[in-house]
Picture 1: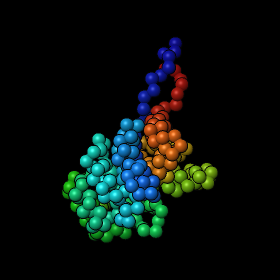
Picture 2: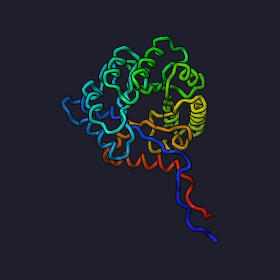
Picture 3: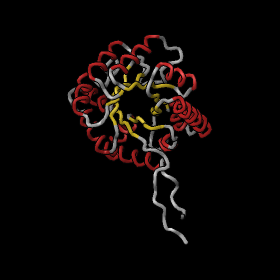
Picture 4: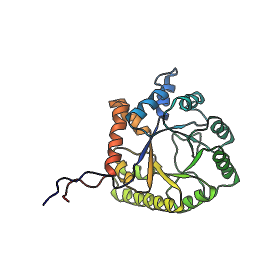
Amino acid sequence: MSAGPRTMQPILGYLRLGVNIDHVATLRNARGGRHPDPLRAAHLAVEAGADGITAHLREDRRHISDADITRLKSELTRPLNLEMAATDEMLAIALKHVPNACCLVPERREERTTEGGLNVSTAGPHLARIIGLLKDKGIRVSLFIEADAKAIEASARLGADIVELHTGAYCERALDDDATGMAHELSRIATAARLGAETGLEVHAGHGLTYNTVAAVARLPQVVELNIGHFLVGEAVFGGLDKAIRRMRTLMDGARLPAAGGSG
């Protein structure tokens, strides 16, 4: 006799969503003034289901400003993840504000956005010093890296708490409608996620994720957080930030559930 529909329970742990608000600041800075306000966007993101807020304070201050970081740290009701280059200037800012986490990323003035993972395999004592000083202040340290075994091993050796796997190549193959390339890149991410977890690192992922690409990454059991920004801000232009984040949250949650149907 059928016991009726199954209660849908997650097959994997809860997957956190970090919303990057950088490009709200990009819109503001295009004209100057105060509108649209990144802090308002952060509050709306939390209300819509974000578990944390990410902001990248770039050396050239092209979007997020020092004042934005001050306001975010003082008013946010969720953890702040400060993305930054591994420089002494950014270290001083992080030690002043003490965000929940710092994600160290590569940064070049001429790039439009972060173009790849941090080169941790050949990192010298400077990066280890930055990581150590952040951790001494109680700040969790994440390294934004390529999905590569050597990068995972180097991140653990440097003392990072977290690795954030760069999903950009996977998302680019999706834009090209390249199913073979997508499968290859997803396999790389999955292998790196397993290795990261086995090494004792917390595994995050992000860069370029959309409604169409998020589910496959969200299904990876070792990944505990996704950081998504540009796509959500872009979708907000057409339907609102609240709607965009809620839809992404639904897709992420759905990816962690078993297939519907069946009896038991």
